[in-house]
Length: 89
Image (cartoon, rainbow, N blue to C red):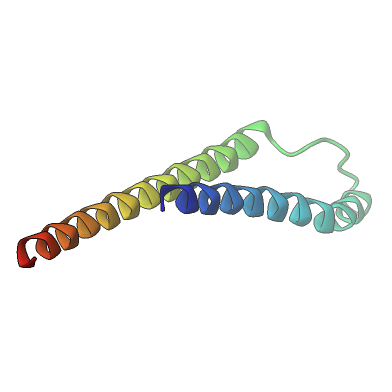
């Protein structure tokens, strides 16, 4: 069962990375057009970029924590079930 949770976490991480790349790719022409219209050629402020990266990292850590907690709860329930099955037999 543990392998399934590891696989799920791996694929969720990959899905997030793929979605991030897709959003960047889709917004690239919009950003270029905006820069043409406004005459701004510089990159976004590093502070804003760092804030977004930090937020994404926090979100990832919370998701991993939630997954670990779900695994722990499932293991406890399975252990309790097995104990109750053994005591009935």
